[in-house]
Amino acid sequence: MAYSIILKEKAAKLRKGGYSLNEIHQKLGVSKSIVSDWVRTIVLNNKARLRLLNKIKVGQAISAKNKKKKTNQIIKAYYHTALTDISSFNLDKNSSKIICSLIYYCEGVKDMYSGVRFINSDPKLVETFLKLLRESFDVDEKKFRVCAHLHKYHVLKKQLNFWSKTTQIPLSQFIKPYIKQNTGKRIRKGYNGCVSIRYHDIAVARQLLSIARAFFQNKGA
Image (cartoon, rainbow, N blue to C red; front, side):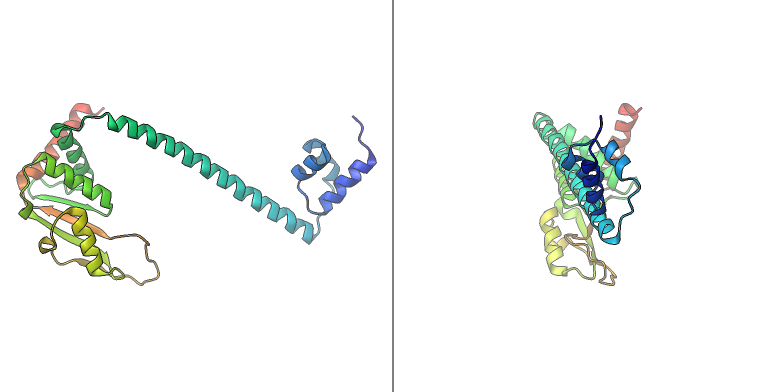
């Protein structure tokens, strides 16, 4: 197919103005391969090069935004599927004990000769572990001790109250918090520190670890 000289001149003018191959293709209705062939020898000045560069950056930003939106939609779909599956799951005392044991095996201290010691910074995980522990064992609330690990930038009273509410353990059972030094240059917004929860009962610790190991032995590869 023959193209007019006027069309080629328009393509050249647009290119010199810093237009991308895709923009020229859309404006003139000519394929990008042909546009590329027409303008490949054109040298762009600084102004045109800057426009083209900005256009590329905007395109990349839009592409990244669309990709993120699509990813979020996929994650949201997975979450709703999981909600449906979990709502039909019967969490009896035995299941609670197994899940509690697996969480402890991942985040707890694996020592058969000391009591329960669970360390984490995720409030939801801490809350869930303690809920399952209380449901699964005959817990003596007086045996709990909590040590908060905080940064110097934390407001001590506020964070201790936060962890007391999260763990449902009174402040009277909190031991002296560990304060980490911090330059103040890097402050993690929304970070509440972490807690070391101790439950002084060797038998419970041994049961938790034994159940987890038995699960891996029975259900593992």
